Image 1 (cartoon, rainbow over the protein chains, first blue to last red):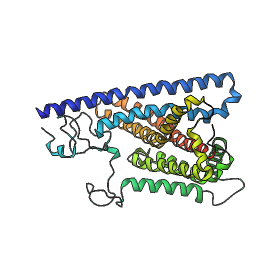
Image 2: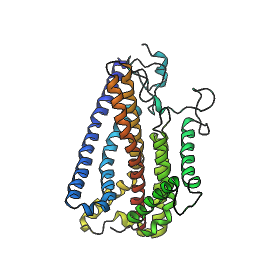
Image 3: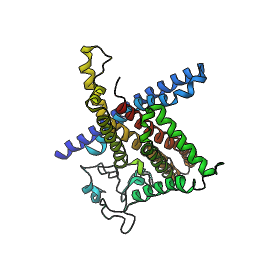
Image 4: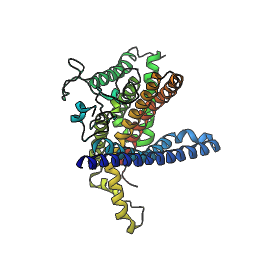
Length: 81
Length: 277
């Protein structure tokens, strides 16, 4: 009986980890938005694009950070809980 | 249960066919049960370099992580000291690579964090080159990737966090707290923003370290997953194409993650030196 509950908790753990991984996909949308808009702007005004690559990477890093938290949650569920 | 022997290292009962995984994602090698001939996470196991492979690892034990971090330091030394030894006006190949890297990071620190941040340029350049070479050396087959371990990247990120906080308070005194008090926002909104700013400040070392470790670890695990397909004859061509494609991507990721880690250090440093919104 106790074993059943433990197996159930294990199952829930993995389902939760899978759900948390959706956050990584959401972050992918965010990063795609940043990069796509940068490219759209860069094609309109290529001479101004070079100076903005640092800003691009900062924007990508911040968008990515939230995906990392989702990844962290699923790692914690898989290995620490 | 077929894996009774490995049960004692896991937190709870595991399904019969699951590989035994302990708290840090290190997989017991003895029993896999799955279809792959090796587990994709086996490459991240920290092992003692000398003596028995299963011996316990203490903080002073020389492990494969120690070896590959030392090799990264040696490569940086070779690039910056040995390759630039000639100090030629027309640089040799090695010297021009060293000069390019130096100029690249120097310009980045100046552009992002301002001229007064150049005092911290040696630190930032060291961080960049160490992470870059650790990432690149990890791409050698059968090598070990120290930057895939949160223990390694967390130390780097915490060092940056502590440095930035100390510099902020030393340089600005209590004015550093202006960073959390957004004076450009309406007064009623400021306490709410202050809470958000404080949370985002203390979450920095977490995202800073997990970003690097996560991308390197995930990339290398994907490489091993594709390599594992080679055991199936039908899937072998897919395996070769997959490994080559992912490897190319990983070379890019290795450089980009080193760059992102460095540029975020510059951004944090800028906040410490100029905390006004």
